[in-house]
Image (cartoon, rainbow, N blue to C red; front, top):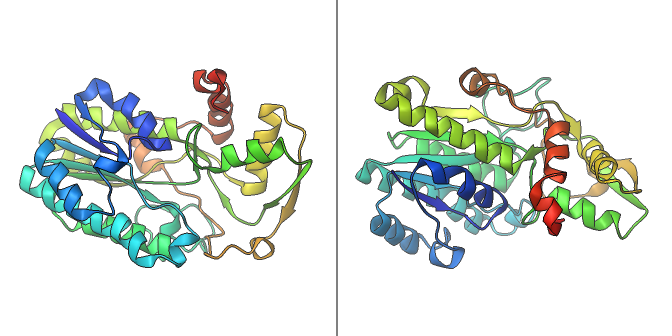
Length: 294
């Protein structure tokens, strides 16, 4: 099986490059060679590589900046996945795509299931939902994995920002009225590879029964302030967390107050997912952390 991985240099793509290699021949072009903002370049890559599986780990993720760049966010998060789906149909290929908790408005009392109606609050959420819809409408074999609060030891994410700031300041003001599940990029990558392995073994009957949309996060729920406190405690850093509201923080793009995703559908196939505290501890004690990446 030939696998094309986009976004291989990002926090998720880096982990996927490791997790996917046992499944087949992996082609992972650099961003300059496969920029999702350049649809002509993306089309050329797809037609040259002719993959059996497309794994799209690239995205426009600057949530606040998307409010000022809606066309660019839509091109990368919606038009590019739509193009991938179109080319996948021509090639007879499968598409794995990642989406976000930000497709919901956060007003639900409990965790969101895949069957709940999306209502994104931000341009970013709208662009990610449009990408989901384009893939689902394409009539191809696909998996869409919605996740939340992704962090890792590469790229720009909350974990690395908190570790840096905690070494510079004695106190940090962190939002405490938004709740979700911090999810390690390695959990995402390893579970994705496991799911694809099941699909490969199951063939067409598997896709008929199980293809489509899933929620995939670590288990449990916390606030950004709670996540920050856990990071400092686990890393042995003495930094005080001062809880504030989202209104006090004043981000340009609105975020859902409740980002909890129900992962029961996926766990019925793949088994239990780690709780977020355990995954955080594993991340910070991993070999990458030991090599000084944090």
